[in-house]
Image (tube, rainbow, N blue to C red; front, side):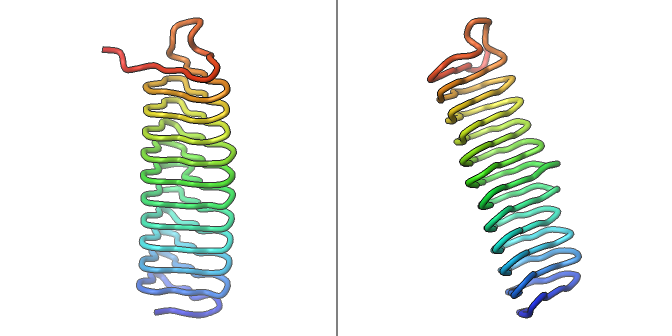
Length: 182
């Protein structure tokens, strides 16, 4: 158990609480919470809650932050970032939610729910957003505006674009679909 204004260590396990910040220069595991920031250079595993930012090389488990949850090495589990969830250079596996945006640089597998914008290299699962954009979409995307280069599933929204559909069927209102070619 570590409690303080800014508890900091190389590795932290168990219960960690910081008035301002909880920080690990390597890995952080267990239950961690801070008013401003939960941070690890390596990975965060377990449950983490912060008022503003949760940030690590990789995040797995349950993480919630008032402003953003960010990782460069991937996110697995359930994450909620008030304004943003970002895994800019890696994958997201699980459920990611945000009032603002979700950004995944590679593959997103699971459920993504964002109020404004959801962007993924490839998406497999259920996407719900104001604007959903991906290079490849497999599953269901519900948004005001849907855009993908390669659709293997269904888009439901005001405007739906599937780049791999035949000419005349790429941009459609209400619903667009493309099922795997046999």
